[in-house]
Image (cartoon, rainbow, N blue to C red; front, side, top):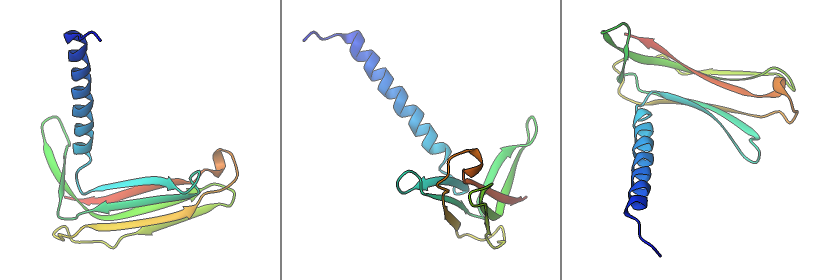
Length: 133
């Protein structure tokens, strides 16, 4: 077996780049304000939608060229909907919290997916956060 320093360096650099990019992705989603939609069971028979937020946590965003503002999530909602087969509209809200509340608020809903095939039979999930300054 022939040892090549150039090949070893390329492999090492590729692994380092892969690790750095995955660590950055994990860091970007490390805040407490987030939502997600996913499927479980065999073939995605159940569809879930969940939301999580912490009212006392300030999310920062750029509202103009050089102005950074902070907003607090005070209420959230999750929705599952399907156009047909059978039609579905399921929505759940969290209570409205003061922006000084230190706890983490979570809400999750789920529904069985339609067994029919086609675009109008897809169960879609959505989540929203309601913000105050």
